[in-house]
Each structure stands twice: as C-alpha cells, then as structure tokens.
Image 1 (tube, rainbow, N blue to C red):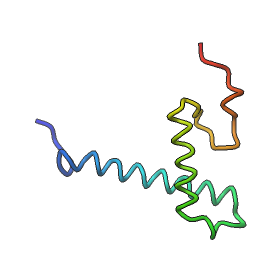
Image 2 (cartoon, rainbow, N blue to C red; image 1 turned 180 degrees about the vertical axis):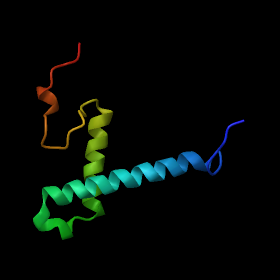
Image 3 (tube, rainbow, N blue to C red; image 1 turned 60 degrees about the vertical axis):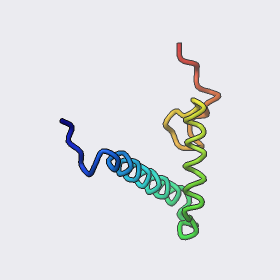
Image 4 (cartoon, helix red, strand yellow; image 1 turned 135 degrees about the vertical axis):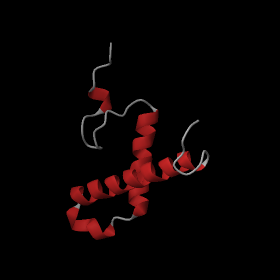
Length: 80
C-alpha cells in the first residue's frame, strides 16, 4: 500500500510547485548576481523569460547545464 504525503493527486502538484518555486528563486538570484546595479528592477517577467529560454534549450537538447553566456551549445562536441 503506497504512502502519500498529501494525497495521490496532490503529491505531484505539490512537487511541481516546490520545484518551480526553487527554479524561479535560483534564476532570480543568478540574475541579481549578474546585474547587481539593476537588482531592484529584476522582476518575475525577467525571471520567467530566462526560465523559458532555458526550458526551450533543454527541450531542444542544447542545454549543457551552464547559464546563458557560458559554453555555447554549438561549440560542444557531439557525444559518440
């Protein structure tokens, strides 16, 4: 008999909410570190835009785990 934290339906939603909020907070922190002069102007629109770009790169198989401006996906040797 499986044990659920909340319920069978709510556990995946809870995990999605926790994971999404952690990703948004991490991206916001990285944006603030990258642009400390305009840290007060960084809103959730900027964070969601950056997250969307990362999600698109991951979906297309171009994501190598680095932040934008890091290793370019075109310069990475194909895996054998």
